[in-house]
Structures are given as C-alpha cells and as structure tokens.
Length: 169
Image (cartoon, rainbow, N blue to C red; front, top):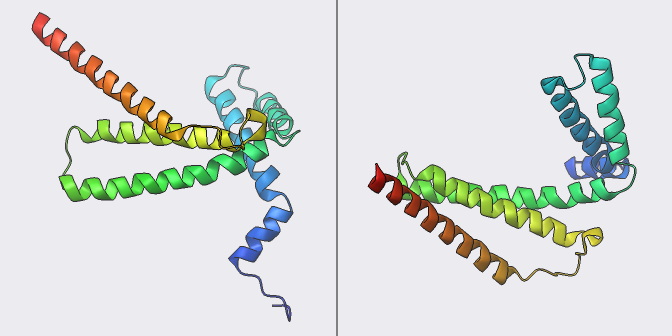
C-alpha cells in the first residue's frame, strides 16, 4: 500500500466512476449482451456470430453516443434497488403472516411487483429532464389512487368472468 493513500471500497467505486465505468462501460456491456443474446437466440440475421457481434457492438456504441442512456441507467437502478428492498420487506411480512405456501401468494406478488415496477419507472422518468421531469411533476397521491382503482376494477372483472364461466359451464 502506498504511504498516505488508502483506498477502501468507496474509493475504488469513486475511481471507477471517474473513469466512466458506471456511465459508459457497464451500460455498453449490458446493451451489447442483450442485443447479442436476442440476435443469437432468434437467429433473425442467420447464425453468423460475427454479424451478430458487429450489430450488437454498433447498437451498444450508438446508444451511448449521447448521455441519455447513461443518465437513465444512473436514475433507474437506484430506484430499482429500493423496489427490491420493498419486495424483500413484503416477502418477510408475507412469510410471517402465511407461514406456508398458499395459492393466492403468486397473485399478491404479481400485484406488488407491478405496483413497484410502475413506481420505479415513473420515479425514474420524473428525474430525467429530457422527459420533462426533474421538477417533481407527478401527483403521486393521484397516481396511487388510480393504480388502486384500476387494480380493484381488474379484480372485479376477473371475478365476474370466473363467475360467468362457472354459471355457464
């Protein structure tokens, strides 16, 4: 270790941030991997891995030409981390209440996940100036009420459809 210079994990992450690892390298790798994976799996352009890699490389580099992708990734992933923490707390509380596997749990998990997804996306977009955000422009109480009303309507429609199917069959 160099005298007078100590670097912990925070220092390493700060150095990586200064070198653009989080703003350019990791977003590029993610975009490249997803595009290459889709092209490889679908064989849309044939089975030539060189062509697939060239297209994935091009898309990855072009996506980072301006800072839109970097800013979006820097905004959405912290909100995603908070959403995962909320899911973890919900998992703990559901385990405390139910204790064992129940049939309705997957529907509850889907509902919680869908609400968290919507909140994460809206919160991320709210922070981006190119989307018209950055001003706290969303009326969160109204959005939450709208989501709950839509969820309730969905449950009513789903329950009505099941009742009609059982009455007709």
